[in-house]
Length: 267
Image (cartoon, helix red, strand yellow):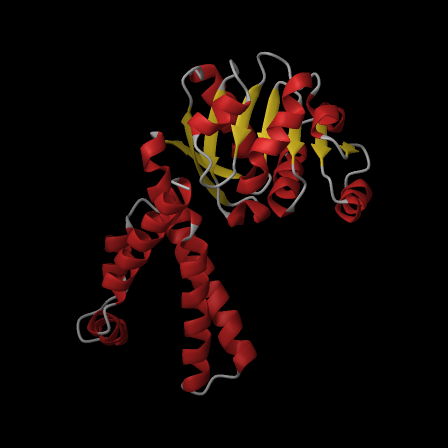
């Protein structure tokens, strides 16, 4: 079985580790490098069979996949510490936002690199991630990256130039949904519902709608039309949303988040 070393044991690193174990990876082929002693103790308590170490160099030896899950500003330093003991053919899979393939390849010369953009629903095994391969990454490396990230959700392949757009849509997308959920709860309270009832109905409505999109054969437009009777309540509500620029606001949100992702990558 492929050995995986996670560089960084934060929330996303923890989610990926848990996903790998749930997907059938054996604990003894997984290792985590985490510099924070309190976080190490937490990981040791929750994953007692996984090797948790303070040094990236200790984690990567004999690992076929090195998964970089630290903050973007820490990537170069962490990989510099790991590179001397990293196998020459190890796949470096980075989920550090804004860190380009070019930067990664300079940190680990000669090794295949795959850059990924996941999102936070990976924490509950419902993530959406996009991957892009570096100059020496072939289809086998991309398949391996898909296998690793697929343990916590869906994975698609894109050119690196589109990863900023992925960030704007799915990377930041959960924040848009959470804001909508907040607004729906407040709207429910405004029209007289108890807050706890509004929360329950909002969460289940979003979950049910997402499930219909995922499991049904129809797309969003057809599903929206199916619940919009002429002159009915949904039609009235949708008209109010359109009057306030709901669709345009989402278009602008994705565009602005994409633009900001490009700015951060240019630093």
